Image (tube, rainbow, N blue to C red):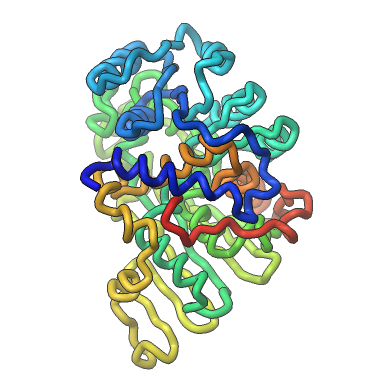
Length: 452
């Protein structure tokens, strides 16, 4: 194989046999897997165009529609499609609701939604009602009502949706998942994770470039600063939990033999965004008077039905290097991403860390061993290729995806539940059972394979 396109042809053939796996027995089945998936993109900002770039590499995908209210983004996408010789996509974007006309098109089988967060649930729900297989960027929902909307619509329509959590496909994460499944850590006890990422230059810009250069947000800014920063003004919550929770939820079999039971959250003071504005715009800048509600460091602890604990940290408003802070701990040892270290009793020297590199290489996931070099240019170190591949193959076969509506609801529910707990000075919040008791019987998705 010399290209990602050749990889797609081969995995399409291999993936066709997955419909007989037990996990899919109860899935809503459509006709035989499609040879070509017709995809519409709703939202083609920076994230949406990255998805478009990767989809254009595939011979089993045709982009039939694009939707965005920014005409410059539409022009850019049309040029990308034209450059690849992929025909012409129908354009939607006359107003905020023109995506509904896209969803009514019989030329669209599936949609990928990469819009601001407040649109995620309503667009995903509308897509499922229209019978379109939906992929939605993270987080999938903002409120508990929206989380239930995702589940209820999926169950009522039989149409699938997938939360596009790319970190679940990170190379070290899948290697550790392989170790978990092989019992290297023993019975699991505790996890740590989160989103620890200095986003100050994402939340503010000069209205001309997407990252930094000024201290504007809202109407005077562009890209994510136009909408994302307002969540820090309005909400004291972990507004972005799924990059951390998604991977450990899979390791802990959440919604598939285990479930999240309760949550408590605490927030620190809020000074980081104000200090950034003063430093880069001056004390007299109008935004220096804005009161940011979101605490700079938000810590959430979850309990599971099987007795594990999960600590999630949201830390995006202060200067710091990037880390998702993963820790996976069991009866026989633990792995920590910070420091790239691991300790396995009976294998490691007593009371001394091992460098994790050798362990991660030994348990490298079959997907990465087989196709890693072809995924390398897809974005985020290759993760974007694998998450999109899982979406496309699931949509072509019209079967339940690896990360489904129940996962989207449970992982996203951390946001409103953390907000409620913080507002009540850390009061525990009961976690809804979005599976309505079916978590006891649901089989875990078969992650350790080399297809998707």
